[in-house]
Image 1: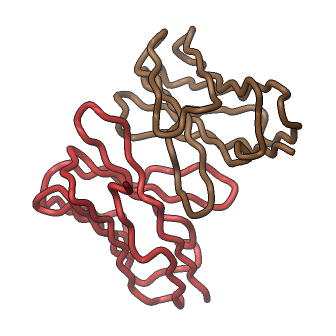
Image 2 (image 1 turned 135 degrees about the horizontal axis):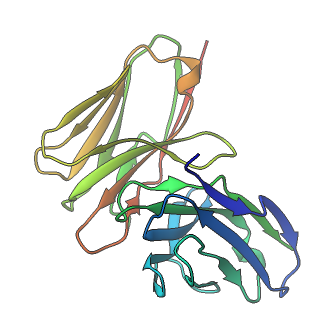
Image 3 (image 1 turned 60 degrees about the vertical axis):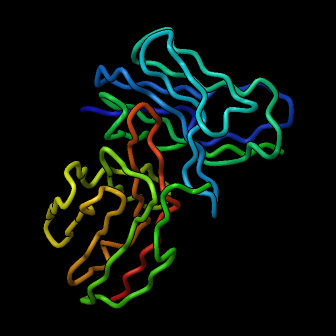
Length: 111
Length: 110
């Protein structure tokens, strides 16, 4: 089954404790991206990757890091999480950056 | 600056009613997509429109791309409670990332 998986689905952590949210897709898509979704602000792109070892900033990259060492994986790293990064995060993949296939989401709470 | 404006932001209707959701911009898009998102889940692609003036139908949903490729609409005929959700439009501009509107939250009650 074609899908995008994210882990964990839920995470509660404390300020400053490094965390990684994993994302994996099995559709051989070149393009992958991370979004955060907040009430009243909609979906905002954090980072995206056009292919392996190619990443670029989206609209709200501050406080986040990504890597794309393999085509199927695109982890999101928060080196020092802060409460303003409490949000619902989605990973997505697509063939050429157009139609996106989204993961189920990761709800992150930073206290 | 929000490049894609969706309206209305919220819509609450009775089962059987018709509705239209709009997605407007002052910019031209090479393609535009509509997604539907249910609570606790990721958005799911409904349709992609590419050609100015294009109309696509998906059962009771009709999608239209404006002639100038700056706007789009989603019309639902005889809405059902199962249509409840957040509807998002998203546009592609050449060489840039996908841009999302803030969405229209639709509630259909029986």
